[in-house]
Length: 154
Image (cartoon, rainbow, N blue to C red; front, side, top):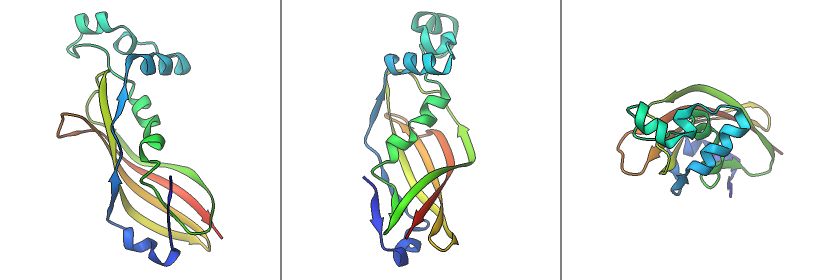
């Protein structure tokens, strides 16, 4: 659920944390289905026994791009938009870093901060978000990114 904010109050949120998502389990079935879609069946993702035996990982890990692809779901209840929004789009990333592997069976959550907001043209807003993905039981994020969105409003 997007949070609708009056246009004249949007800049009040710059530099502020918008929230933290609920925990989300990344299980082996989800990793296997992602491997099928992306045709990336490296054993470190889909073969728990081999990954435990042949690596220092202790088992399978999720694809970094799977973690990245979960961001829209994780932040859906945190995002803010201007009143009168007609549509929005993912505009890309300035930076993405995968800081640690995500062990299959772990729970993750996202933390979202509004870094910057620019009204590019009348009714066209570029949002820049800092987003990090955390794993339950760890103090360090496994992913950090600077994410751009374009939002159009009447």
